[in-house]
Length: 304
Image (cartoon, rainbow, N blue to C red):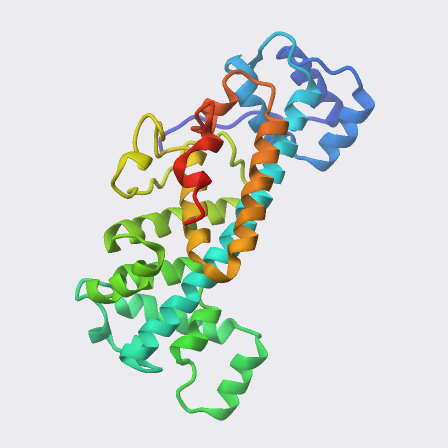
């Protein structure tokens, strides 16, 4: 077995504070620091300190405990906003899939492998969906189980309410191209682009759901963005940071006609947070993939 033996010891709260100070972090109020580290795991806290380091485990001169704490609080607020938008997008996509797939293939068409592209692992996906149905404690699932012989298979407009967002994304990726086109048309994207972007947003949503650090993260699952100048340099420096995801979210939100007011308010709240509460590290905008005038981006300003 490769690798060395882990030999880092357990640290008391006082030991954690001493370690932070030895790494150059200024801690003026040790009582407040102790209270906060009893709330937020040292390991998580030190992750937010990465943006303030000049080298590994060495903080930039003048960096305070409050600077790192504020970065965590900024990220928590940002994560909440992203999670809110993902709820709206997720529900809209679920509804769109259920509506179009049900119209074409009927209530149980999703249980037939022929309703999907040949290389899609339909059996594994369907077994996962049946497992979700058996695990569900929703009253509408219990009613279906007691009433209809098809259980654990559910009509597609019921199944989309119990499957995970990841399962919805996999279902779309496995559909015939003509069917993906019917779904992606609602969001103004080409089928392949929509599948990739949705896969990426599921990944971002899961980061938020697990309370992981979001603001300065480099994406592990990148979206294949739509073609055009709005999705390219210099308007969008890269697709591996937060800005690409924010743009995708506002584009999709604006396509949800029933949620236009939410989209407008959400956009202003994101602007207020980023413009008013940036972490006090070097190059905070760059760490999110944002340009200096990111809020003037044509896609961000657009209502369509």
